[in-house]
Length: 150
Image 1: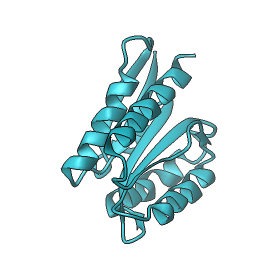
Image 2: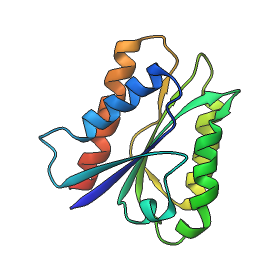
Image 3: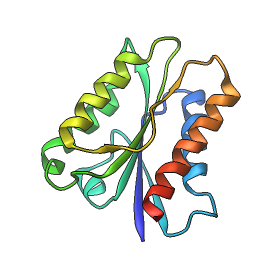
Image 4: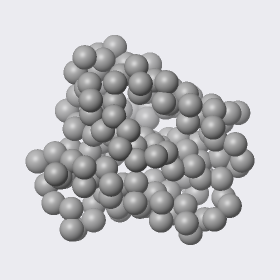
């Protein structure tokens, strides 16, 4: 069975709703053979990352950057996971009040260094269309899980 690790920082009800949609998509009953493990960014460990086959990342955009919690996650797992997780699939959701590009670019630089493989374009949530954003998060979760089920 494959394992999908969801690493998130959910400081607001809206980010929590979006992460919940990602998890619901990943747990869709039509996708078999994937275990979904959820960890807050401040408690996720290198062992969690190494034991997973793919990753869903979720963060708010804070002052044009990923949350400090997600940055802390990357700081603690980067070197222990550098050679262990090459080529693994990931997806990203970023929520912000307007511009999330800086946060998306920062995460992309780090996962490029880890040599993770993007299998879905980042979901950028700025509140313009809440229902569409929730659906996009569900699709992100389902896509990552389906990638691992194949």
